[in-house]
Length: 237
Ligand SMILES: O=c1ccn([C@@H]2O[C@H](COP(=O)(O)O)[C@@H](O)[C@H]2O)c(=O)[nH]1
Image 1: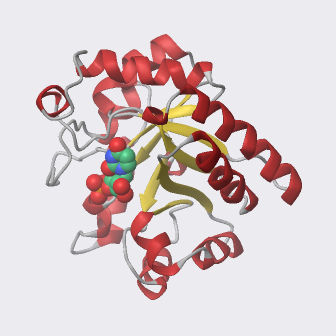
Image 2: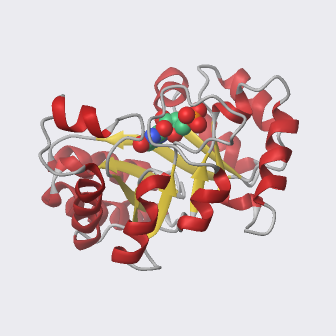
């Protein structure tokens, strides 16, 4: 296990706060830019991260009709980001077009193609919510698997899932299908709004390629110590 498998979200609303976090945690090599920061400040932060040789997960969770997600994916790929998210519930046609648009955007910009990964079931949802609020009749792990398989058939590079489903998805989708797990919580951290958590060590042992760990680090009294504690706990997994 390398600390390079941990992605830390920049869930702040100003560029100043984002840069303060990046400076505070120089050992973090992979940062996530999500909706709060991107909507608040635009794409400038991507240039800042690139100028510091950081890897970028652009977590925009695209969800729209095929033509629109394709346009947005093409535009995102031109930034040369490493990962981009789209909701699997856009459907297979939208996923396929978005994936093709990324190849086009990347080749126009002369950058390596962004890996497009599909959100299966948000880690903030419980099995009960999936059944009673979203009216999905499948059991949650089976639904997450079906979403991942559809994304794989559409040519996507991977999926986002909770650590609780990652083992089953890895077995079914194979080792080359990238699995990124948010909803990761060390035993000493609050779950907050995450409903299907596991510890970092359990998530990696179950097959996650990358872990997204935010508040246990960024909202800690001492983020550097929290980061180091997580790296130490992962040790030799
Ligand atoms: O299913 C998902 C997809 C994305 N996320 C994002 O990951 C981080 C998690 O942050 P924590 O502070 O560790 O809870 C956050 O940016 C989410 O937008 C997710 O949690 N679940």
